[in-house]
Amino acid sequence: MDQATSHTLYLNTFIEEDGVCYDSATLQLSEHANRKVAGDNDPVKTHHEVGMEIFGHNMKTVLDRVDKVTVFNSFLSLLEHLDSYGSSGYDLTTPILLFLTLYHSEGSQKQQDFDNLIQDYTTQLSANFCNLPLLVVVLTDSPVLPILSTHIPLDVVPLRLSSAVLSRLSMKVSFLKDGLQTRVSRMKNWLGFGITTHGLTECLFWGNGKTSKKNYTKYKSLGSFPAMQRQKATQAVGQWDFHAHELSYDELLLSTIIIFDHVLTKTHLPLEDFHIAQADLISFLAAVRDTYHPGNPYHNFRHAVDVLQATFYFLIQIKVIPPLSNELSYSTEEFKRARLGSNEDKMNFASFLKPTDALVLLIAAIGHDVGHPGVTNGFLVAYKAPITKIYNDKSVLESFHSAVFNKLLQAYWPQTQVKEFRELIIDSVLATDMAMHFEYMRQIADFTQTEQAVGKGKDEDKPQNALKTSNKDITGLLCSIIIKCADISNVVRPLDISAEWGIVLAREFSDIMALEIDLGFRNPPTDEPAKKDACVKNEREIDGPGKKAIDPLELAKGQLFFIGTFARPLFEAVIKVLPQLSFTLDVLDDNKAYWTKQVSLNE
Image (cartoon, rainbow, N blue to C red; front, side, top):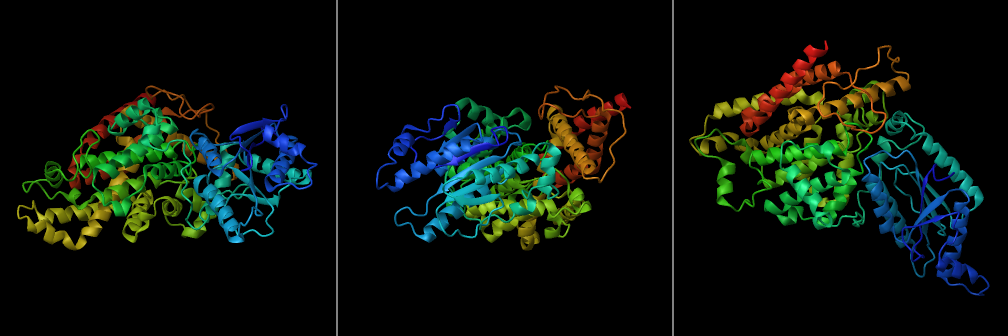
C-alpha cells in the first residue's frame, strides 16, 4: 500500500498542527510528538502524553506502508479537506483511507456521549460524501461501539496500530482500488454488479436523517467567493444562454447559491417555513453536489445546475419570482399586477404558484438526479439490478433520487419535510421519469380543455369558482410540467450549448453499451470506428482525455428524434398553459433546422 494506492488521512485531536503532510523521508512527526515521546521515562503520563505517544507510533507504522499521510486536528478541518475532492469535477480512482482516533477514556465522557460522537461522525461522512470511495478506520479504546448505520466500509481497531492490522487494511484498499480503475468498473460497483458494496442500495440506509449540520465548506457566505466569480455567475444564471460546461464546479456551486439566495431574500417567503442561514444553505448545496457522480458525462452536478437554472428562468418568465436584475418583490403592487395579469387576458395559471411553491420546485430541481449511476431505468430493470427490487421496477431511479435527496433535506433543511412540501418535492422529482411522459401530455391536454371551458375569464369570479376545488392539483401539475421542461431544456438552449449536451448524453449512452458488453449482456460491435464530432461548432474537451468520438449522423438523428417525439409536443402543449415560454419554440426550430441539415450532409 502506497500513496498511489490510497489517499491516507488521519484525525488526531491531540496535535496542534492542522492539515500537515507527513512523509517517510522526513519522519519528524512534530515537535510536540517528539517532545512527548522523549518523556517516556516519566513514571506517570498524562492522557495527552499517552495520546501523543500512540500517535507517534501509529504514524511510523503507517508511513512504513504509504508515502504520505495528511493529519488533521479537528473533524471540521477533515470535512473541509474531503470537500475539496467534490469540487474537482472528476471521479476518484484512488480510495481514501481515513483513520479516526476516538478516545473513550477522556475524563468523565459517558458511553452515551461517545456513542453519539461516533454516530455523528459516520453519519456526516455518509450524508456528505456518499459517493467518495472511503474506507474508514476507527482507532478507539472503547470496549463497546454502537450499531452504526452507514454504507461506508468501516473498520474498528485498537488505538495502537499493528503491522497485522495494516496488512489487512492494505488488502482492503487494494480490493477497493480494483473497483475504481475504469469508468465501467465504477458503474458496476454503483449498480451492485461489482466487487464492492458501495452501491445504490447502501446509499439509502445511512443514519437516521440527522446530523450536527456543521458548516465545513470553504465558502461560508456569498461574500466568501471572489468578486469576479460572483459577477460572472450572477450574470450567467439570469440568461437563457446559460452555459454550464463553461463553469467550474465551484462556479456551478456559486450559481446555485445565487439562485436560492435570490428566492429566499426577494420573494418575502414566510421565514418560519423556510429560514436557513446562508452558511447552512451553502453546506447543504455542497452536500448535494457531492452526491452526484462527476464522472457521468451527462447526469452529473452540471446537469442538475442546468435544470435548476432553467427552472429558475421559467419561473422568472411567468412572473412567479422577480428577475435578478430587478429589486421588485411581492410587496410591490406593480409586480403583483404583472404576475396576476389583467381581466382581458386568458386565465393566468401561473398565479396558482405561490412563492413557497417556487422555492420547493427549485429545491426539487437541484436534487432531482442525486446519486445517478449513469444508466437508464430500462437498463436497471432489464438486468435486474438490486435497486429494482426496492421499487418494484417502477420509476426506479426517480424513486431512488427522491429518497436520498429527502435524507439530505431532513439533515440540512428540515423545514422542507413538512408534509405539503415533501409531497411536492417527491411528485416533482417523479415527474422527470420519461416513462411517464405521455401520461403528463394527457394531463396537460385535459388541463388545457379546462381552461377553454372556463373561457377568457372576464367575470373575475368565474375562473376561480370553476377551478377552486382543484387548486392543489393545478399547482402540482404546473410544478411537474415546469420541471419536465427544465429537465429536457438542453434541446431548446442556443445551438452551441444544446449540441454540447447532445454530445455528453451520447457518451453516456456509449458508456452504458460498454457496461453491457463487460457484463456479457451485449456482444461487442463490429462497426467501423465512429467519425469525428464534425458537425458541432466550437468543439472542446468536455470530459477529459480519452473522450469517445461521436458519430455526427447518429448525433443529428438522435437530436431530431428527441425533438420530434418528446420536446416539441411538450413545449407546444405547455405554452398553451404558460404562453410566456413560447420563446423556447423559436430556439427549438433553429436547432431542428441545423440538425436536419447535418443529416442531409452526412448521409
